[in-house]
Amino acid sequence: ILNVEQSPQSLHVQEGDSTNFTCSFPSSNFYALHWYRWETAKSPEALFVMTLNGDEKKKGRISATLNTKEGYSYLYIKGSQPEDSATYLCAFNDYNFNKFYFGSGTKLNVKP
Amino acid sequence: DAEITQSPRHKITETGRQVTLACHQTWNHNNMFWYRQDLGHGLRLIHYSYGVHDTNKGEVSDGYSVSRSNTEDLPLTLESAASSQTSVYFCASSRASGRGGFGTDTQYFGPGTRLTVL
Image (tube, one colour):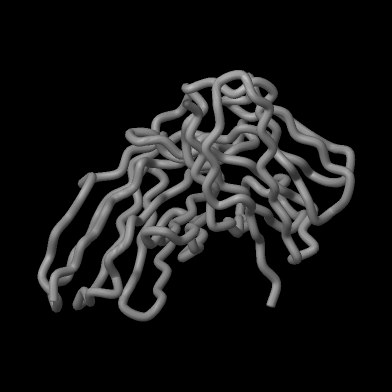
């Protein structure tokens, strides 16, 4: 079983703060990394799919970077808003195994 | 709009009973998946299907079964429910391309079913 770790487990920030969190995954046999946003009582919603080392993706105030050589991806939120409060999940796909390995998520709470 | 639905949203059952959770998608996706989500664990794959009459075991398939008789539906059956199967269950689907839904294909998730086995 491959290990995908997300840190921190939870994060509390004030409205307007910028924040970032990490998804760590095995650096060998990388195929793809997905980021999902998961609001309480809703289903996970796709944010980004990243495939190439050095990839940077952006959607509004949220952006992500990928380093496949060292096995990590960062998710950044600029100027957090209360509506950004959610759990952010990453899912790693290993080249050799036909499945996703999900992290446990980072739960973000943005206080007004 | 295309969507993926699950029913029931909440279910309480007793140990030993057979339970079936429904998943229905209108995306016309070939690939469908069942996950369970427990505290301290990420989403774990139970079963998946690449198309009609195709089913495959995931990492936590013991005690569960699926069948795929059409494109839209992948019901998950717990043959004899156990307390260890108390969990939140998510169904997902993706189009058929790349590595059967596990590479760059986005998976679209349903709203989840909270199952309690007493």
